[in-house]
Image (cartoon, rainbow, N blue to C red; front, side, top):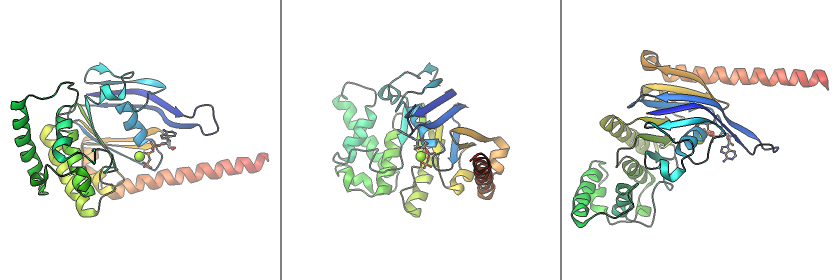
Length: 270
Ligand SMILES: Nc1ncnc2c1ncn2[C@@H]1O[C@H](COP(=O)(O)OP(=O)(O)OP(=O)(O)O)[C@@H](O)[C@H]1O
Ligand SMILES: [Mg+2]
């Protein structure tokens, strides 16, 4: 279970480039819950996921995961509990290593010592099974370098690696955004299968309103470093892509009003 309490993150504090990326975000996830995060560009979605993963420490607030306070844990220590898939197909895998080698690394996550010989042959047959279930014909290419695969194939393998040892939390940051529509659909189907099968607690960022409406059991919308909407249960199930677009329109109008108010004030006092 994830419990985030009032986290704050400001980049470049005290400089002209100061950015208030997270302005008091709290979120508690029930075990097995699948939360979709939407929001305009720069609203803090990736920063939120990165804060949870430990890419940096938050300035204020706390993060608990699986009953432990991980707020001050370094990223590598949290990686034992967290699986991640990013937008960029090149970031989740080592391109010069083979599929088998990449999957071996995933299977060893958090374990300092290597696997015994008996374990190794069991592992390779498990790899072949799991990879064949991707339906991409990759089970006969375990010895090929990952760098030789398409973006869609790499993302599917990255998802497999991220979930190989059932993580306490799965973080997906626009993991289909760089793929063509067909590959994106395939990866979404795979994500649904993996998340549902392992009942993984999942946070998924997307700009696809279709994905946001159809996937997950809860949806939050971020804006300017805060959560501005939180839909759960029946309310979430009823959401349609058009409802979400309407929420974006509300945000856009409020921003315009803010801007014109600021302009009026500026004109008045110049
Ligand atoms: N390491 C960093 N240093 C400085 N500023 C940062 C850093 N990371 C994020 N930011 C800033 O924080 C704000 C939120 O960025 P973030 O990447 O979280 O947005 P996002 O909601 O993921 O947007 P997008 O939909 O474009 O991916 C932005 O203004 C961004 O420039
Ligand atoms: Mg982002």
